Image 1 (cartoon, helix red, strand yellow):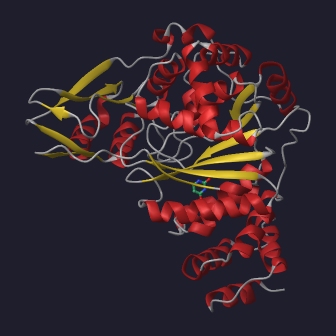
Image 2 (tube, helix red, strand yellow):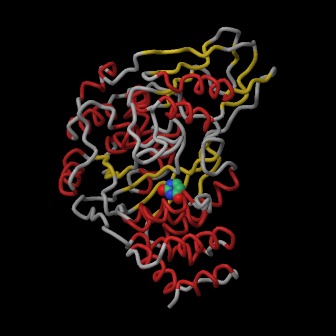
Length: 434
Ligand code: URA
């Protein structure tokens, strides 16, 4: 078999066989196929696409390219959750302890942030002492004892995706539905859960800008999950404005703690209840989503979810007092308010721009090697639909290093769009696939 023939076949729009896909993934991971041939195939796939059988084959070949996590030592159905990435998306911080408080084990591997979207591991890393790198044995032991652990993805999980994602990033081939679907699902399958709830984001802060594109991606991922024998459901949720108010690592932990305490922003709370309701149904812990949501809402109200968060933080070496005293989290030295210049309604808040402001202030990475500042970011004071008067605070910038402040100010001013009449109510959940 020759890589040249595989590239040509896909370039001409033909279907690749399972053997050809396996040959490519094995050869590229082993360093036997050079980047230039892999890049050519990725571009051919970008234009010609993959059918559902080819996408499933690519996913399974990638999932088998490295270690797989064995969760069989944890009793019961293990349900994973994955977001395709957004701005201010701190749902895992709330969902993992919340679902565990309902008695469903959560063994979650999460990623670091790159670009304008944040990563759960960086957010948890802002809690003093919190360890995100547990050995596999400690990870399993903690889930057995506490019911929940959230850790960084281990080094050798899906090495094919690490190489291919880095190549896609520099060859303009990231935003291809079969490539995104196989990248995400290969990691979920290798991470060992029995069932998966996907949060597929649509809007200005997401990979998929429209609900239609997000639905196509959701259907592709649900089909892969099913073929891999995992119960899979996808919720399509809005990312046309940041989720909640806080964007930035410690700032998001603070907002997650508020939500775990039964308060917090209504969009974040609702999304966590919907995703959590589906997780409970897949785990067999609720008969329908509504029943699951009601149970979870009760756990938030009664403080059980916050208790579980405290336990998880303690088990992972963090300071559990943050659950009750969020002021123990790192705080920026300087805060600057951004104020409204006119009496209008907020018509839109461009999520990606807010994410870029937070990144410029130091909350995110431009390259994998960058270090982040856990304290900095943006807190919104208004959301889409709110009425504002001249001088009202729209957002607060939390700053330590003023180097990029001028650019951040400019970007944030352009992130808000105003209208003279109230905009229509924005939907948070656009649909469910599965
Ligand atoms: N997230 C992933 O893990 N992979 C992609 O290709 C895109 C988003």
